[in-house]
Image (cartoon, rainbow over all chains, first blue to last red; front, side):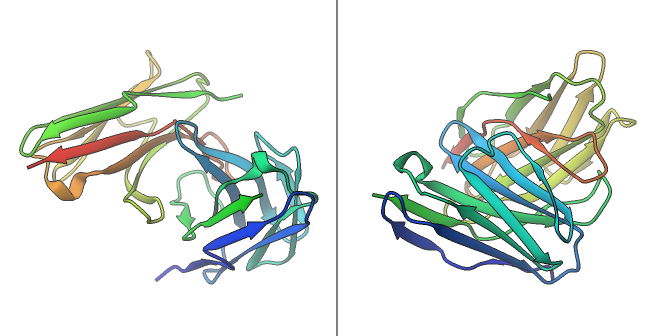
Length: 113
Length: 112
């Protein structure tokens, strides 16, 4: 059974703080993704990684960075959190190939005050 | 880049009736079209998908149709039940990394 876990379900941070969101998958998937979910906007891709130390920008990378030092772990970093980054953040993973299911983590509800 | 539009944004149906959600995509190179269901407070999960070489696929009460010429695809749920209440997302993909472009989502409410 595929398992994707995220480090926190709920997180409250102050404006200007550096924030780390961590995602771990146990299925040896090559590809990992970070999405942001906002009402009426669906799931928007922030960054994805197709291999260790490899990353590509998604549709909304501004204000975010990522790190993938190990295959199973993909971190999302908010260098200086702002209130407009208050959102639900979802991590997902999949194996290589365009016709494979993405497995999602439970999400992290981040509030920036 | 790819743009996926999804309609309607909300859909209220009586239990037992059918529900239809429609999506259009812009990039003719897209070749994989999954649908995800997200129940309240839970993670999105794949419920059905279709590849570009297939026009229709069915799995019990759910079916998906694809019209490549018109660049649109639809999700059909028959004999709706209260447990079908959720947000449904369509998506499109064209690359080997599995990168998906999602629609904005449809909130489906099934009333008894």
